Image (cartoon, rainbow, N blue to C red):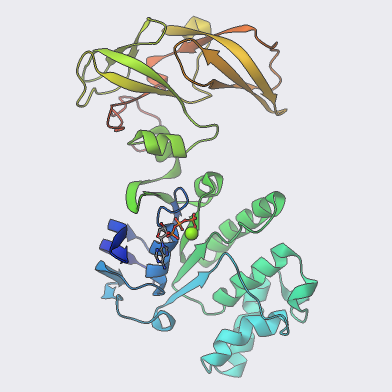
Amino acid sequence: MGHLTLEGIGKDYDGNEISRDIDLTIADGEFVVFVGPSGCGKSTLLRMVAGLEDITRGQMSLDGERINEIPPQERDIGMVFQSYALYPHMTVAENMAFGLKLARTDKAEIRRRVEHAADILQLTPLLERKPKDLSGGQRQRVAIGRTLVKEPAVFLFDEPLSNLDASLRVEMRVQIAELHKRLGATMIYVTHDQVEAMTLADRIVLLSGGRIAQVGAPLSLYHFPQSLEVAEFIGSPRINTLPVTVVDPGPRRTGVRLPSGEPLAVAVLARGLAAGDTATLGVRAEDFVAPDRAEARLTARLMVAEKLGYETLAHLQVEGVEGTLTRRLDGLAHLEEHQAVVLGLAGDHCHLFGPDGRACPRQVEIPGIAH
Ligand SMILES: Nc1ncnc2c1ncn2[C@@H]1O[C@H](COP(=O)(O)OP(=O)(O)OP(=O)(O)O)[C@@H](O)[C@H]1O
Ligand SMILES: [Mg+2]
């Protein structure tokens, strides 16, 4: 079993609060990803779960038992690190067996577990090799194997793929997803790569400044971000933002005035907003609509078109908006430099954020995606 509960967890280093007010329950078998910008406290939180850092405040329990004071080796938890130092003079099999030997596990049992882990990780033909004769991806699999042989209830991964090149990352990502399916163990995975977070997670925990900014299914965070910060972190290209003036706050639709002067009724509850307030409109790159469906328009000029084959990202300049907006177009769009482009907006496809950065709750339903 691997049911983890974090209640009011906090961590101070030299009097500075690094993690604060972390309340989180992770179900047995769940795949949870901690994501957030560098320095937001992802590794610190993971290391507290592992027992490698003292917990300053709060209580942590595994399957209902407090583990705050339990040393790492006695927790039913295994960790895979970003920099995985394998022992160079040992074979793959010896590297994987090492921890179990130290724990004086029975020899036959060690063999069984190493063979089983090698089978799962496709390392069986490599068991007698030394680390220097392996590729980066194979070494990373050995590092995972070292943890796998411990058969822990909870696996912790701290950016395990960040030392690998792009194509290997994709391959390992799929393998980790398969590993999770096969083992059904609880996994907590730290990354600052939002694609990894979106593709691996049952639930994402987005951390910011040591706190939880939002917890939810990947697509819930994408479609129903609770703050501008979450909206900007999740999704690539980054969500477009433009300043608007609130003219008609309402419970299901909130009227705003665009930089062009045109009105738009955004499908949100105007929580805390009053007429005359400045707010931020958010539009994802794929959420601009065709002119015939548009409820409001922005006139833009094409600055750069990035043609990626399967899609084109048009970077556009709009009067009254700082920087550029990005529109995603299918396939090879025919665009000429500096050409004028009309961006269509529809109230159902926009987000609205107040001056404090909090999202106004969207009043739209997306099948299968919880608010
Ligand atoms: N041993 C330490 N003593 C003092 N401060 C620390 C210590 N370890 C981490 N910190 C600080 O705690 C904060 C969070 O660090 P942490 O390593 O958890 O961030 P992170 O989210 O994992 O970042 P990254 O994505 O860069 O790995 C940072 O400001 C860091 O400087
Ligand atoms: Mg880290």
